[in-house]
Length: 229
Image (cartoon, rainbow, N blue to C red; front, top):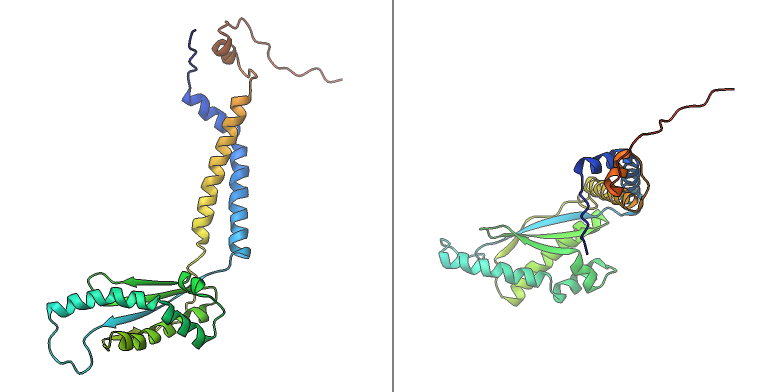
């Protein structure tokens, strides 16, 4: 049985794409416009409030900071991060602010980030309400300072920067979403073009006859307009 190989002509593929460019344009417009409408009118903007805390020496502890203190504080940052995300802190913050959310929702909006080679760490809270995000971030910081002194019995963490009400959302990223939608629209358009071309068995030029049937074209009947009556 003979194997038949079909040669792929890159120039022919390019001609096919340019011949049906309007399909790509349609899906590009559909993707970008629909994403813009969804992002603008249906997706709620999410704001992020941040408060910074610092781990130092305990009040009244006079003296220089040793290497052991730095190593200890580095380990304490991990402990404080887990305490901030604990159910103990979450329950108190929820009760103090009368929040209508459970522990899972509380933790999903909370993230703790540390500054490399530093004793600073930040509490980040995201919410659709910028004022509420700010109140939660500041309340977590204040509650953490109290709980640390009760649990670890040290008072070496303090709030450096309180959270301010954010003025611009962090999500959704409208430009990024529209760009991704545009790329996907173009890819879908290309796929549709190649799919149409794959199932199209008609001959559009004499080269197609020679290529697929192996026959020599003797002549071509040109297109012409009939006489006007």
